[in-house]
Length: 221
Image (cartoon, rainbow, N blue to C red):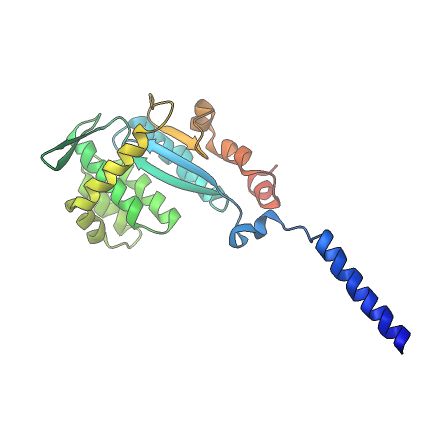
């Protein structure tokens, strides 16, 4: 009996030592609450810019629908606008005129308020299809997803919308190198490979996402 007890104790001690020095490997997907580290795609664009419209409709939304589990999208609707402050009042000069400034604010409000990532991007893409009447575009696009447009309208009409666009402008102007083309896209903060990103965003996201099984399944690599 004493021999058996000794053997059991010895085995338990050996098991503890093995665990201490040779920990069980942790899969990447087990980190950060069981979620993969997502590739962060930030889009610096303008609401009335044809190239921005093309990128959102032909690259960004289609790519996100395929790869939303491995990517995060951040929208920065400011571009080459200028922020002015006078006597405590904030105004903007936008590349395509005052209507674009209004549309940019609607985009900023929608991006801030709509929590679901896919719905947020669908609304932005819908609005940019025809932003020459920004409020009508917002009303139409939010109604398509049964979202309360009054929340976004209140944001637009209050200081909140202006403040949001100002912050986005500061973020845009802090980019190095500075923006020269709209849209400019960063992947995990890098502006590299812009030409390729504009033509094949999915491929660039896949390159940045690593080689986990989930990435391979999505990217077919």
